[in-house]
Amino acid sequence: PRLIIASSAISFTNHSFFGFIEETGSGKNLKIRLKKAEQLLKEWSKNYTYQKNKIRNFYSMDDVEVSERKLNDYFKENQISYAFSLTSGASRVAPFLRYKRIFAYVNNNINRIAKDLNLKEVSTGSNISFLEPYDEGVFYYLQEVNGVKVVSDIQLYLDLRGYMKRGEEAAEFLLERRLRKQW
Image (cartoon, rainbow, N blue to C red; front, side, top):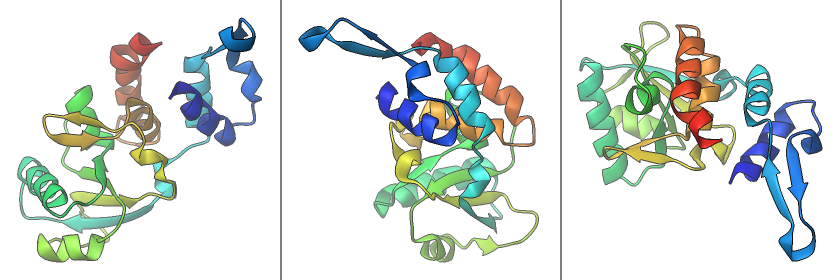
């Protein structure tokens, strides 16, 4: 999995893949491992923004906690591919920020979701943002936290780095608390 993610990262940077992998052994004993994972992730984040996805903003009268529960239940009941990210994802895996806006990647059916849940599409003052992914990679290595799907820690880091409202701090918190432990 790390090499798949690494190859995606390389496509976003101007670096050679071979600067980030290390080979040991040969033949059947050949092992390839990712080295400089943190450096690769930081380079990737310089060339990535969640805003490249199509973002549709909505308003709900419910508070964030109630809205997230309703969305999660709706997604499951209707078998809709989804994953919470940014503030909504970080609050579950590495709580650092208080937030009033929900972010969820959703593959399709946004008009139906909005209609069924009585969400109003708005240009300002949104408290729910659906991100239509330009790439299916956001759904790779999803994690489930208390029955809620969240993007992978790497995807969450990338999304947070580009989030203006203390996102960079939250990304660094995630890096310290979770990602470095995996390397």
